[in-house]
Amino acid sequence: MKLITTICLTSLLIGNLFGQIRVREDINFPDILGYQTLKCDFHTHTVFSDGEVWPTVRAEEAWREGLDALAITDHLEYLPHKHDIKTGHDRSHEIAHPHGEALKIIVIRGGEITRAMPPGHFNAVFLSSVEKLAVDEWRDAFKAAADQGAFIFWNHPGWRGQQADGVAKWYAEHDEIMEKGWFHGIEVANAREYYPEVHQWCLDKKLTMLSNSDVHQPIHQEYLIRQGDHRPFTLVFAKERSEAAIKEALFDRRTVVYTGEMLIGEERFLKPLFEKSLELPEGPLLLKKRDRAYLQIRNNSQQDFHLRRLADQDNIETPGDIILFAGKTVLFTVRAKEEGMSGEEKISIVYKVDNLKVRPNEGIAVSLTFDIVYQ
Image (cartoon, rainbow, N blue to C red; front, side, top):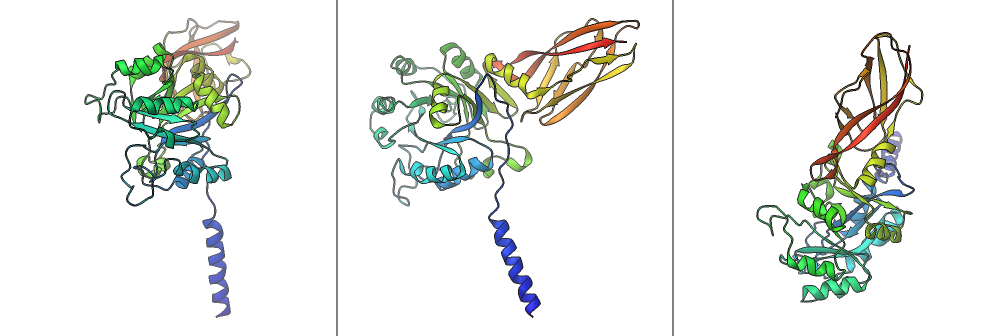
């Protein structure tokens, strides 16, 4: 009997011990251009508007999924739980922030200005008071956010709840708020939607590109994380890992969108992000007559890269289309086209990475460069 009791108590203790263990998934994207690459979601909801989770859950989810920062941006005007939960527009941040600090997750104070189109739904983040945005006139809400130095961006501009065809449209009101300095970025991707027309707007109008989850349910109900799915988020290239540095980077448009299988952004960020993700052979590749040699390339990033060769090489045969799988080393063959070649040569194979978008539905051109010694 004592033995059985001891076993039961031990099992309970072990169960309690392991019940306290939580696991964080690493998200691997390289630091580039002297900046830290931070993973951020700037659009999430809790029970303090129309979300289905308590604010601390959002911080916990962000930690588990490998994010560095998130903003809780509950609606100001749409509060379906107000009869069940006492409304306070700053309350969700007040609850989530201490838990975020304990987990070393940056929790940013924000709110969603939820108005008819135009101008539509906008998030204001890095606020000191969300409550001050709860006013009748939308222009007064924007001004109240701008007076606090907030970063203000347009949410889901092609949302079918406001644009029946799913195509974003630019209105005179958007010109107005841009002229007043109340408009700094747009969601190029929201949840699982990518808006190519918005991608082009950001390039033309010098607006910051963003990608956010807009999550309402528990994150695992909206994204199949354990099956390799992921929430969309924004890569922010910040001078340091701090709220102030994230804010500075957003205003300076140092971002890349990560959604589905795509990375979307300006070439000045996508190219170094791609190049620093790869490990190519350090020494030369030895080619003997017409024998094949093996070239190994490792992709240390979170994302597969889909490469399509743009031109043949004069002296060697190389693969046409290749996928550099995330976190894996890919091996492919290289062969000299003719016998009797000798000497050394630096080879640059030009590919288009189709899932790294520098313009709407257009991939980025890159070169895989390595040395060859013919023997």
